[in-house]
Length: 449
Image (cartoon, rainbow, N blue to C red; front, side, top):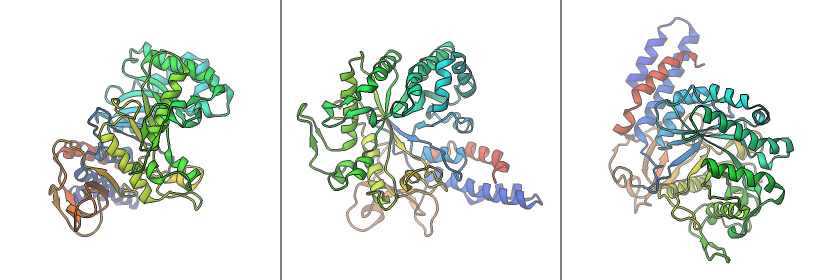
């Protein structure tokens, strides 16, 4: 790793200008980050039942690494599905040939324009979709975000027409079999959510929701829900069982109408959405995907539960569920597709401190906290396997067994931990894309400040 980064530094530091030398040094550090991530983290996100780990890649920050480095971090998690809140050409180009499936976003501000002018939808597709496919796999477009729970009545009326215009524009390019059109909702679209079988959409939203559901069913597009058990715990920490929201051992909660028992809140929230969809009586079933969920590692003094330990427990246990391909109690045979929020801490997000601390990683590429994930069976057993040698100091990511077991004294926990220790683990799979990434880093390095 040091040899390649030294080559990069020597190549560009021959310049006599201090600015270019500073940029070359920064580029060499980024190459080291890319190499460190490439060689040390095994796949954690493959699910036995077909679903894979998705990650939201937000960019409301002024200190994030370039998309090439983000690509390596996502690959380290085996996150084969990525969700953006726009259609950033830099990101989509950086992931060309990666095999990752992208959901891209059409911003709220464009929704009324597409609803009023179908040619605007065609122009958006030409500018934001066509330049990137098939090199980058784009499988869905979200039209706006949580539009139906906003307070802009014009936006509510524009949402479905905008989705229809975008679908027509994709159809004109023969892309509707490849790219779905949908929109993400908050749980606030429900008038009630517990017990799950009693859930229903808010009465005032039904005139918008019913035809939207019919559109999703007709086009084979998923229903996206942003579900955060953290908010329920934060709102009432005295009465909400922390283990219940963190996917840990608890007594569970029963639904008296169905007899189903829930051992975690996220599954209860998803099945509440399922019941509301059925109650809307619009036609065929649609797939439900969790488009956002996560837990903050830090918050303000009045934000209960926002700690690195709880974030690690929530996201680690969530990844374990995804890796097992588990469905919800009401649909146990349907692997639940989940997008974790988010890849990075985003320092420019408004609101309470928690909003800026949902990331799995800090902007420098180091983990925001240790994520424990029960060892999945992916191309062979990793549990207890000697993958390399250990050394002192810090730097890079490593996957090792949790406290006790392989890396400590006593009995192992059976959990793998993504940590910032200095163990060096060689993984041939990650080297396949290594040199292409280094070329991308080198070619764009002079643009980094």
